[in-house]
Amino acid sequence: MTETEELAAVADQPEATGVTEPAGPHRSRRTVAVVAVVCAAALAVAGGAGYKVWTDHETAVAARDCRSASEAYRKAVNSYNGLVDGDAAAASRITAKQVKDVKTVDGLAKALKAAEPKVVACTADSKAGYEAKTASITKHTAWYKSHGRSLKAAVGRVNASKLDKAIDDANQLYKDSDGKVADAKTRDELKQAIAAKDETRIAAASKKVNDSVEAKRKADEEAARKKAEEEAAAAQAAAEAAAAAQAQQSYSGSSYSNTGGSQSYSSNGGGSASSGSAGSSNSGSSSSGGSSSDGSFHFVFGNVGDSTNHGQCTPGAVCMDGECNTCP
Image (cartoon, rainbow, N blue to C red; front, top):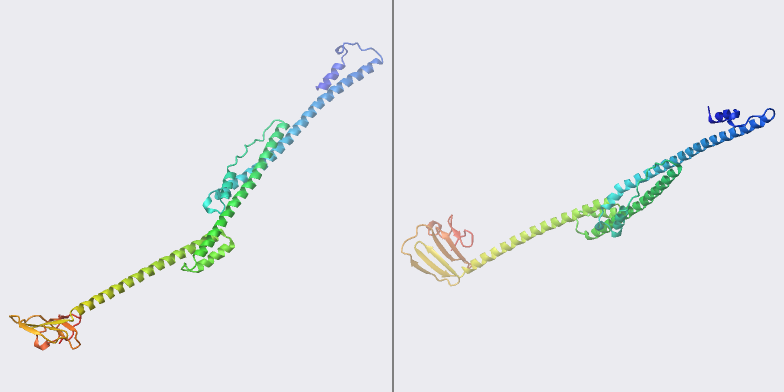
């Protein structure tokens, strides 16, 4: 039995009101009053139930909105973390020496140090509670989106400054390497890469130019070494020739001969000679010397005492001028 039915049953009992119901037409007025009370009670019960249903619905709507905000927040956080761990991490490894503007590196470092907002869980037990959580989540989502844009811009500035530095260095290398490369095509490749503003191509072309410069340097050093060796050899040969000429000139003023047991000396231009006995004959090797018709001096070692070979060098004999010539 419902509450309304119970009230109606109580109203139908006279002793419940403490008033004896009069007979006749007065009974209808009493019935009307009871019905009115019952209806009021029924409306109160129905109103309470309806309010609860409405508030439950409002809370459910607020919870749904909070969950939607949480999903947007999750996407924003993931996008930001992807940037931090990806492009921003790569750009953060670029040093001040690699960029044209050092401020870009400092700006990126500062952006990466920004404190992230605390995580807000989408849990509540009322409409107002969910709405408060939704507001916080929405605010944090906006921070991730905004800071993600500023961080991406900071990464872009660092990379652009790095490219500017690479172009400046490449232009300087192109200028300095003029006439210093083993292969001129490497400089043409570098020039094209600079015009394209492609950092990867610039790096590859710069390496080729540097390698070509090094190859030419080594080739030039080797050529200079060989030339120095040739010049040293020529100088040594000239010195030896001059020494030989000087030695020959020192003997051109006199002559000496020893034939058998006799010895004789003569000056180059005087034509006089002296002889004497050595005390015994020389049947072995002997030496002789004399001046030729052109006035030059010959000093021969060998078996010049042999009557069959007089005046000539025999095998094993050596003449002072380095050849085995016929001597007077």
